[in-house]
Length: 72
Image 1: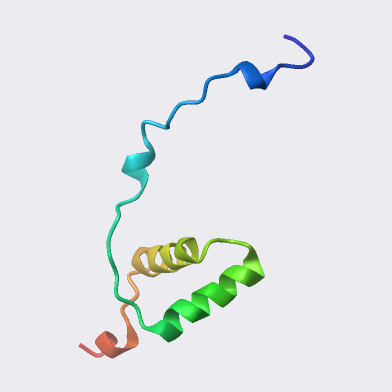
Image 2: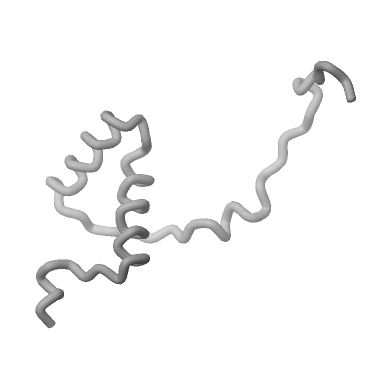
């Protein structure tokens, strides 16, 4: 192995699995909800859409229902 490699000569290519990782959807969110996640994104340095995805994934993994639906 070489001590150093010249990565400038490498050709980039798209990840063939990237499309399988996420599904693009359109959501209509309340402005206060979007603002909350944007402020959180500023604090954490993470993209606000990623934070929304992480939160929803956590809720789904725990089978957590929204409080308005929890009584049903």
